[in-house]
View 1 (tube, rainbow, N blue to C red):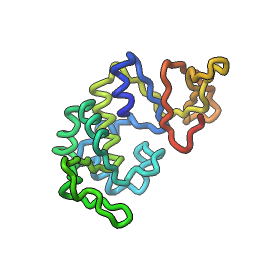
View 2 (cartoon, rainbow, N blue to C red):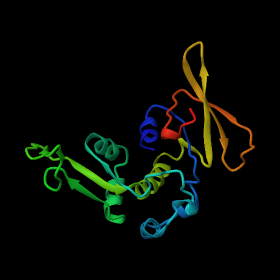
View 3 (cartoon, one colour):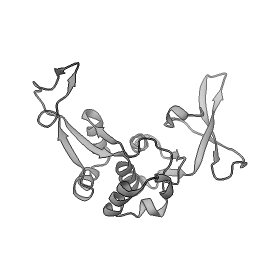
View 4 (cartoon, rainbow, N blue to C red):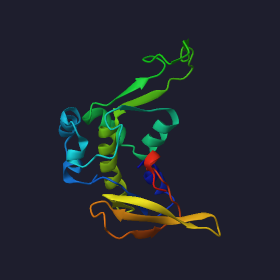
Length: 192
């Protein structure tokens, strides 16, 4: 999603193909307290439409340059996460002990680095809401869909697009989507 936000500077239209129903009302209209309740009480995130992420409840840290880019793309999001979702930053210089093979690496830092500590479940929901608010006219979502293969021009050795299908109907026909720039963020289970 951060890549999509960044690419809005260079492309007039961005399409995100998402395997889960991430734009459902339960997630998109949830208050900060409801998101916390879901996160703390759900045994299975699939019950609210989010089953495709293995590390959904693990803590995630956004650090250094990534944190800076994140803050530039979503200037209001940091305050929203901090004030409404009880997310906090961590000081690498003052609050963390960063060791490798028993050697403390951050003891003589001349400049502090702030890390944003948040679970993926919360970050994804809040980021998706902000993405829709900020870039809704440029970003199109294809939810409950899966990319099945890349569309390649062999003569140019270039990816021209993707073939995707809806997940709900396993027998449904595939659709071809062409683009100027293709990013596969589907991880180790990628069909491409």
